[in-house]
Length: 242
Ligand code: SAM
Picture 1: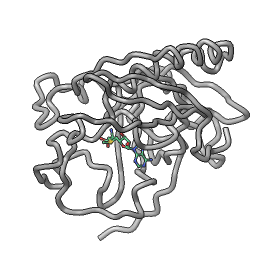
Picture 2: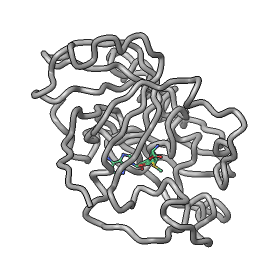
Picture 3: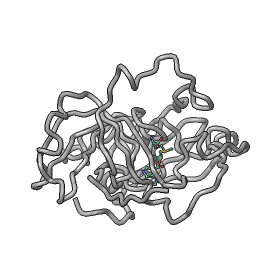
């Protein structure tokens, strides 16, 4: 038995404003985010030397799922929801201690609005995710080239993404704003992961889906096994303060 009080050391800021659509592991979508140290650790001393590393481990809390609890077995989406595995044999977001871990690329240290931040990319985290620890990634020990990947040996297959004329026109207008400079490649990379549940992929699926990126809702549909981006509109998700 041990007791420990764990609290956030930082908050992750990302373009992903809702869980649906976030890549299922890190490194799948090349998009920038920030790890903002909390006020009690808001000093460059806490990260002095970190720029010597190209990648970091982020340990974090699946805070949006804590209220839903966890089960000893889960049905991984990769297996179409048909097979059960033990929670510790998966990277399920519903876990006894609700802890996740991701390797992300480190681009540098920046100060944003008085907050010491690590500029990162490749994260699979919801905006506002509490980070409970940050550690350097050490290739000689952490990279295991002959490791077996179980049910997740290979990266997920990608699906082709196209944009309707309407979406292209909207993107053109938005591109005048610097904050949307890389929006089109981001939408393509996120939707190429095909965020739909596995059981939807096997049959015709007329549903119109929505993912929230930055302050936009992206509406899309799968037609003839291709994602078609239909439209972009101001998001209905309540956003955290920047
Ligand atoms: N790489 C991590 C791991 O293995 O522990 C996370 C893998 S988990 C399968 C990735 C998914 O977690 C994302 O697709 C997203 O839906 C979900 N997620 C990300 N941040 C979350 C948060 N703060 N609370 C709950 N779910 C979150």
